Length: 356
Image: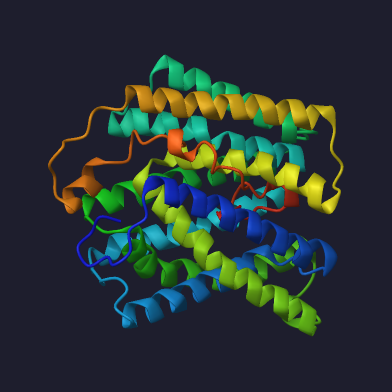
């Protein structure tokens, strides 16, 4: 993590691997919870995820596994509330749109992030990287997008979801660098605001979308087991999300998310016998080609890092050009945010979060 006081450090490879493994795990768990057991209250479940994440990090802080580093309170509050709102908007987007249009909404996050970083941060993306991202998005679109039914309210909600998600992920990266805080420190301070935002709007939003009351649901022992398991896995999902964005970039995190989407489709076919077609296979292959080429050009175009620098300065300067995979990672990326989790047909956290 590169910040004084951090006892454990994960490199870029470790962060990416943790994100993939935890996302695949939470997708399988939530699919059992939502599809098999009928617990379809995604927003409320996400608020519980964040609450458990905060409690886990507080225990870690008491054990002195990381150092608490307070910084600008208004920035933390705004960042946490914005993250919560973006998750709620993604859920609303799915509720008002077809699954195909929702998939297109998630695909639009990458080009929107590129545009925002180009306009406001003067970041330059070479033609090779732009082409690689285009190939990736085309492949994911072929593999996942089916129908494209449009409506005015759904389109507005999708646009708002795209903008808030992009801004939140860019802020995740820039806050860590500006205030020299680690992913753990940022997650610990922003989690309460995210959880509170979703805890307030979650029951109303879920009730509106499902016509069911989360508090009157029949909580059997099996349902409670999968809820607890999902919350425990979410600690790793939320931690790895902040870690990946901090060590690489928001665009790279989205690329990783689409890789996880393809892998989730493949796992669903192999393990859960979900429907699978040659179109899915073709789309996944195209997406993997785009992902590999993106990593290759990121590695090729990355500026050389200084040979002598303190760990703290390395955290500030590293990241934006770190590739999604490297030679040492090529054999490790075999697992599958808010998102990532698109195979569930519900907006998962990225986080999500969901999103897996």
